[in-house]
Length: 193
Image (cartoon, rainbow, N blue to C red):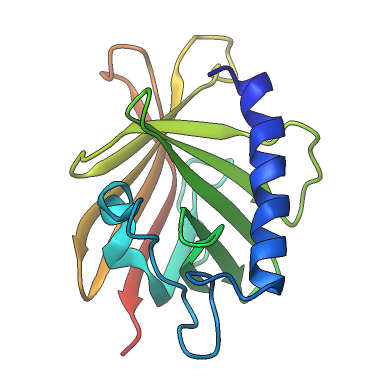
């Protein structure tokens, strides 16, 4: 599936998700189940992210232009089942007023996750989509991305040390061999009780 064909599919699924939620879809978030539930037909695929479902209190730190870590920003990261239990959405709200969200869809044909990112600070007609394989531990997602100097490489996002108590998220640019790694963001999260 190409990125160009994936975006219309994502928009169609988002539209059907909103309709399902407005019609109280069986597995959609509700007062009884605020984070939704996995559709049993998709539950096996969604297990990669099941420990993240719920609210997390996090500390987010980005790398500055001077190659020094910036000021920590308190963040609430919410994870829930959407699209009537067939996908996962996360919403990241930072105390500095910025926010972002991703929709995670699994494609059984390619055995890959497609994670499309939306930023409240940027409007894009072609949002970025990272890809990962099912069942990886840690969860690692890649997006082809050139370095500022023009070298080929990837934006690599890693969910690691995932437990019922929390997780760590790391963002880095890596070269195609994985030998050159330049961190750009880190987030440490604790699940709320």
